[in-house]
Length: 387
Image 1 (cartoon, rainbow, N blue to C red):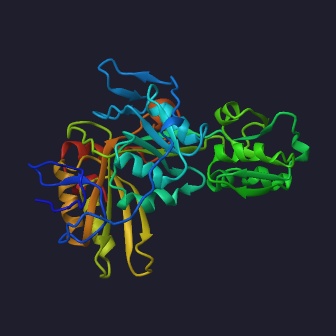
Image 2: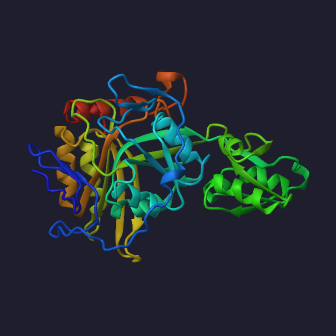
Image 3: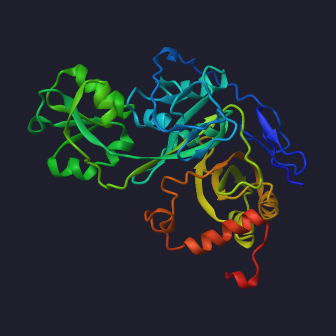
C-alpha cells in the first residue's frame, strides 16, 4: 500500500488502493500538520465578473470545455489573475463558457478566494510554448490547498494595441506582462522598442491608455483591446505563430476521474533523499513500467540551495497497477511526495497528435502511445518492449 500523504484537507482518498489526493504544505510523511500560517488577502473583485458564451454545455448540466470534461466540477463562478481581456480571462471563457469570470489583482487573491469558497474554480497559466514555465504558480501550488482538476491550451495571438489615433511610428515603449514580452522579442528588437513590464497583458492595455503618452503601446489580446477601447496597431507580432499557453484548472475539492478513463495525467510534487543517484532511482520505476513522463521540473525549497523539490507529470491514473508499482519505487527514494491532481488531457490543444488532427507532429508518438496503453491496462514493460 502506498503512503503518499497529503497534509491539508480537502483530500480525496481511494481507500482500496491507499493513495490520497489533495494539496497542502510540503512536509515529511511523519508530519501531518496542516497549516502554513500564511496570512492571505481577501479578494475584493467579486463584482467584476463577466459572462461570455463560448464553447458548449453538456446536456447533463456538467460544463464541458472543448478540452474535455472536468468531471463533477460544476462551478457557479470561476476566478483568474488579471484584468478583463487577459489571456486567463479567455481561458476561463473557453473552459467554462456560461460561468461568470471574476478578475483578481494577485495570485494570492485568486487562491484565497477559491479556498474561502468565494469562487468555485480558478484558471491559472502554468507554462508557455516560447517563454517556458510560469514560476509564480509553481511556487504557490504546494501551499495553495487547491487541486489540479484540468488543463486547457489557449492559442496566443499577441497584438500591439494603443488608444485610437495613436500611430505606430511614434511608439517607443511597449508595456506587457514579462512572459508576453518574451514572446515578441523579435518584433521589439527589429523596431528598437523598449519593453516595460506590467502585471498582466490587459492591465498593460489599461495602463498605457491612462497615461495619454502617445509613445507607449501595449502587447495584449484582441479581446482586451475591444473591452478597453483600444485599437490594434499591428496584428500577430508574436515570434511564433503556433504559440500556446497551458492553463491549470484548480479547485478546492479534488475531482478524481474513474480509473478506466482514457487520456489522463497525474501531477505530483516530491523531494528526493539526499543520496547519490536518488533522483534517477526514483524515476526509473516509470521507465520500467512503460509510463510516459511528460514533465519533470526542479525548484529550490525554502530559500535554500541544498533542498530541491520536483514537480512531475505522467500519463496514467494512480490506481492502475503499473502506476502504483512506479509510485512504490518512487516512495523508496523520496522524503515526501504528494499527488496534486489527476485530470483529463486537453485533446484539442497542444497535446493533439499528428494523426489526430494533422497538427503538432510527434515523432515519438508510437512509444508514447504504447506506454500510455500500458498505463491504462496495467501491463508492465517487458524485454520485447525495447529499452
